[in-house]
Image (cartoon, rainbow, N blue to C red; front, side, top):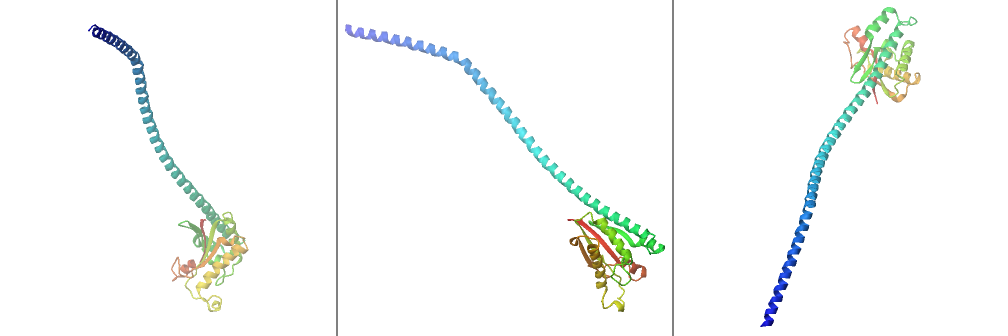
Length: 264
């Protein structure tokens, strides 16, 4: 009996000791927790601050990317506008070159007609200068149109002396634009070919084409223009610019055209 009491006493002592130790540990843990709570709260504040800064940085990056996208779009638009301006400048430069050639052609022809050494009578020169020579500008093609009598004698396709001098001046004025195509067009009136010329020129087709070819050959063989720039076409009397019912109209229809096409 006494032994049992002793056992319970010992158990009670152990229990009290355990409880004291657990409480001590609890107090230590609680103290440690209180000591770490402050730094933990500080770290949490830092994390929140970093998260807030990251969100702000993300929003700033998003705005920057949007601005960059807008800038790229605007840059592409400006590049397109710049290319259009370059194309327009190229076209204007081409037009200026052609205009320069045509103006020079016109000046050379008028100068030639006004040369006192020429055998053309004054009244005829004035009429040619005012009516039979004109500059054309049509859809990128410019050129000079003049009466056939300036270059050819009546009814033939041989170039006369005044025509040779005129064509040499024309060749000099277009020589500086080697990529510019030159097309010579021959036109006639609707009068039948004279019987003496029928064997050589059965119709006005042959006559108009022969005159255009004669001019092209002269520009190449005598003036030195590159043959790949040159071409000839004969239209007979099917493209009149005046009525063939009058002598004045037929005179206007008998013509040579030297057309300067756009640069390649």
